[in-house]
Image (tube, rainbow, N blue to C red; front, side, top):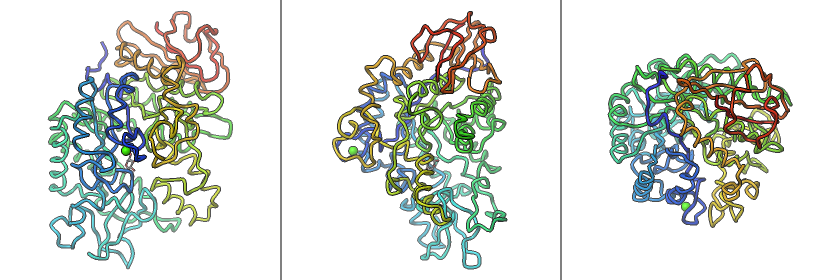
Amino acid sequence: MSGETARWWKEAVVYQIYPRSFMDSNGDGIGDLNGIADRLDYLQRLGVDVLWICPMYRSPNDDNGYDISDYQAIMTEFGSMADFDRLLAETHARGMRLILDLVVNHTSDEHPWFIESRSSKSSAKRDWYIWRDGKNGAEPNNWESIFNGSAWKYHPGSEQYFLHLFSERQPDLNWENPEVRAALYDMMRWWLDKGIDGFRIDAICHMKKQPGLSDLPNPQGLRHVPSFERHLNYPGLLDYVDDMCRQVFNRYDIMTVGEMNGASAEQGEDWVGERHGRLNMIFQFEHVKLWETGHRRSPGAGLDVMGLKHIFTRWQTLLEGKGWNALYVENHDIPRVVSAWGDDGRYWRESATAIAALYFLMQGTPFIYQGQELGMTNTRFAGLNDFDDVAARNRAAQLRERGMDEAQILAFLSRSGRDNARTPMQWSDGPHAGFSRAQPWFAVNPNYRTINAARQLDEADSVFNFYRALIRLRKATPALVYGRYQLQLAEHPHIYAYTRSLNDQRWLVLCNLSAQELQVDPHRLALARWRPRLGNYPQGGEPQRLRPFEARVYRA
Ligand code: GLC
Ligand code: CA
């Protein structure tokens, strides 16, 4: 047997929904909860069984719902609490589960807690947020916010600065204060008692601040110093996590997944090691950072497959038998993977499906971000005004200040911007891609006429049907859920190959991540012993020849 204990959330496949862009049911151009309910058939056909909905709480929408003004109410544009209750009931009636985004590092500046906190220095809730006096007529320290500019904002009325690691409309809560934690735990229990099935915990890595809030070294004399590393996974953070798990999470049969930028594979066990009883899984960021920093090492060099192997294999092996991985290649904060890692032109279908096979059959719970199952691509931005994201707008202002010209900024943000993942779902080739009867809040990707769900449902070899086949195969195969992962052909620069084994069952996943045809040494993998079970090309090619972005799954 494997060393892994069986759990429902290990066997699940999660589908992430960005509600604003998923489906508009009432013709105002904005996705909503009833729109999600309308598409449960589609999701069931795909075969996913857990839905994660990005924030749908009451919010002024400075950061599309990640700035919450009421944790126990629904964003007006998304519907009502009755709509939510119905969606939850319908999801459960279909044997699926629903998890919510838990945003508790910060609130909106319109949250009543913050309004009370800022009312005066002596407010009973002053200490619920992080207020400091200025230093020599300037900010309390030199930290830069993750969304650029100072991490501090002055409030003239109460004559102090408050800390905001994200936008200035997202003041950070003070987790040191036990009253804050108690209020947040009450809110979490309220949702769990309603029957939701878990949480994705937003920005959990930032909840502990360095106690002195001291200046960062500034050798380059910057106006504000990127402060990310300073408040990422700061010692003491796990105490908060333990407290939250003891007081809330561990009292329910739920799934928890923390957004844990900054955790190395060596630290993974601290977070998800089953002996600690903390979170079930975390989203680690190492493969995403690889993409940001060097996935195209030089023009034409292609994806850094060796880098990916190194990162994924460390997580797979260091957690084996100890804790569980969350597997993902897309979300609402990063560009589309087929554009970033694959080839969204000539080998669009092949690369979208090869990347799917690559990550989906590792050990862990796979997450699919809406549209990923259709191979949705990055979009086209004609100018800087086309960006909606607060992070992109702030970044553009910063780069302009540093003297970068508009064309360069546009090129940079077009490649890296989060808005790429936030264009409306491409349901059909009809008006507005079938997302809405009205002009959508954000422009649809012009390629919806060729890339859309209606078309892919019918096409046997579509990206959608490949994901569907992967999900079915995983559901039917314990070895692909619980089996041991082992990297194969470790030194090959373009082929990512691994086996999964459980008892006497063995599986092999073989992916060519390049646009070239490649030969595999048939003896190295003993290919003659393997029987093909799934692939993204018609069968019948020579076993030792891998076509561009060809992926095959074999059984021993
Ligand atoms: C997380 C979310 C992101 C949001 C940020 C602030 O990183 O995924 O979308 O902007 O936290 O809440
Ligand atoms: Ca709507």
